[in-house]
Structures are given as structure tokens and as C-alpha cells.
Length: 296
Image (cartoon, rainbow, N blue to C red; front, side):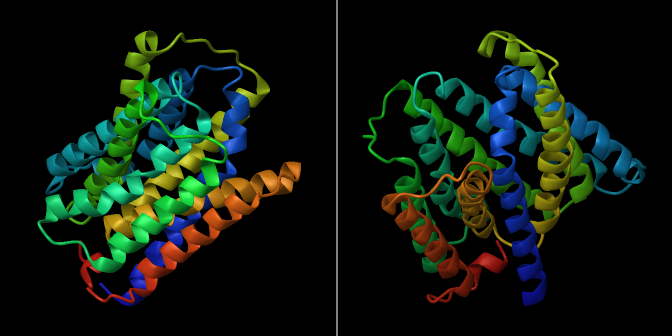
């Protein structure tokens, strides 16, 4: 592993954050015509089909194929858990609180990774993750008090699911075929979303132009491409690094809204954006040198 490969991985993950942040408005509009888990099931099913075709050569009998598939199952279960708890939690809490509490996964990752790898997280990683989490709070919790009730607890479980997904993907991506892991995780997520939507929500689907276009964009770009890129990139960078870089997503979401609707940031949200960027720089530049983040 070289420093150049780490930087390439970080840039690829930042590209993921750009894709996810840019598609927020598209997904929000699509959910007027489709219930969340039905939409997720279709989105992940389309991504599974695309990746199965793209990576079909990797399904030949090969060493560690079973381990690759197992890694994809674990990552897929964690990924779905994050989405499911977030969806259910949104029924009992505000979107702003959900956004912030989902973002606390960033602070969870260093400690989850430390438990898996049995290595103490570096000071820069912990400090950067906490600053980024604070920035998420400033950006999302304007004029809202945070009380931990049913919806908030469910959303914290969502954050734990996403944190576990990042750590699990990082663990398996370094040891097995990232292509097989990428396919399996979206396939498992599609199956779980399709199998649970009937009792986690009131399913409905209207095949509108907005839903079809959103499925194309999110299924192919925000899922098939993005999660494959993440599986590849986490071979070269740490789970903590990944989580912190993903904090760019709300900045890209705001930038998209600004370009499309002219939405501007308040002073508090601007402070949050500055904190997010500062936290990312702390993790990238490592003023408290530990070297741990490159190898975890």
C-alpha cells in the first residue's frame, strides 16, 4: 500500500459522497410515488442485476469464493439494517434529527473498528470524527432540541448499522474479492427490503416518470457504482477514513439544492460545514501521527 493509493481511494469515496448528496433531491421526489422499502428493494434489485452482469467472470470457481460471498452477506445485512431502522425511525422523529443521528455513525466507526482489529484508534481519527459529527449537528439541528425518544433510539440503531457496514466492508475488502462482496451486499439488501416492506411500512408504488428516473440514477450510479467503488476503495483506506469522508454528503446535498433551488446556508449551517471540512482535514493530514488509519 502506498500513500498514492490511499489518496486515490479517498478521492473515490469523496466521489461517492458527491453521488449520494446529488441524488438526495431525486430520491425525495420519487418517494412521493413509492414507499421507502419498496423503492429500496427495486433500487437494490436493479443494482444487483447490473453488477451480476458486470462481474460475471468473478463467479467462476475460485479460491475464497465462499468467504467473499459470506462477506457480502454480512455487509448486506448491516447495510439493510441501517436503511430499515432509518425508515422506521423517520415515522417518529423529524428529518433533521434523523440526518444528525444517522451521521453519528461517523463517531461510532473508530471504536467499532478498534474492536474488530484490536488496535487503538489514532488520536487524529477520534478527534476528526468527533468534530465532523459536531458539524453534522450544526448543519441539521437548527432550532431543534434533541430528545432521545422512540424515533431517536431507532435512528441510533440505524447509525450503528451503517457504522457496522463500513467496518465489515473494510474487513472483507482487504481479504477477499471485492467484486463478489459488492454484488452480494446489494443482493442481500434487495431481498431483505423486499421481504420486510410488507410489515415495516404500508407499501405503495406508482410507476411515474419520477420513480423510473430515480431508480435508474440510484440503482446504477448511487448503488451499483457507488458501493462497488466503496468495496474497492476500502482495500486501501481505513474504516474511519471512509466514514469521515462520507460526511461530505450533506455538503454536496446542499450544493445540489443551491444550484437547483437557490437554497442558502444559515450561519449555523455554515459553521457546521466548516467543522466538517476541518474534521476531514485533521484525519487526512494527521497532525497527531499514528499511522493506524492506513492499515486498519
